[in-house]
Amino acid sequence: MAIDRTPVLKRCRSLGLDPIVLGIEKQSKREPNKRRRNESEYALQLREKQKVKFIYGVLEKQFRGYYQRALKMPGITGEDLMTILETRLYNVIFRLGFAKTRKAARQTVDHKHIMVNGRIVNIPSYRVKAGDIISVAPKAKEMLPIKSALIASEHIQVPSWLEVDIEKLQGTVLQLPARDQIDLDIQEQLIVELYSK
Image (cartoon, rainbow, N blue to C red; front, side, top):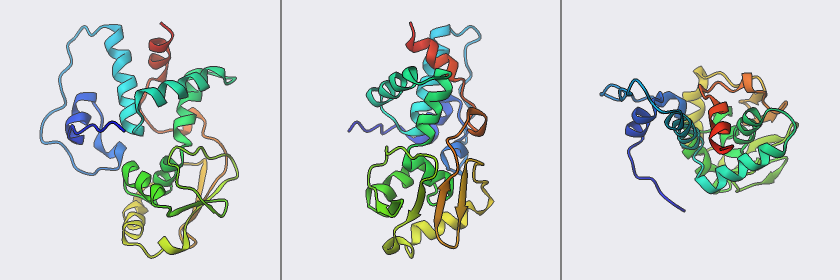
């Protein structure tokens, strides 16, 4: 798997992202990069795609596959693409507050600490469905990273398409998220325009 070793805050600055979107509470000491006044349409489209790939930790080949899947779905392609990305298991773990960042959530899933409908799932890209119950595996309930993530996430609001039970360390997918329930400042239509050229 390809590894991008660029410092996270530097990437956030170059893409114009607030690090809090990634679950990182640090702030860069430098100002965000100033953009040229007349950026080309292609540059704007490419930056939106890079921003989404960076937020969700997806590489190009996989991202293109998700776009092709969204293209075949009924509805608006850009919104369907965002729904696909948002319903990946590690993102749901992050949204429920069981991990501080998406990277930590991915590692939690990789290490078999997460169960979906009572079965251990260790595939971070597993897509959850409406009605799925996601829980922390019994052996992982006392782990320090999960406990500290729960403490840190007390002030974070869980999206309305999810329901969390902190006592049982489990969450339920009430429905698939609509675009207005995804709180990211992304112009997904620019990504659709980029791929449809």
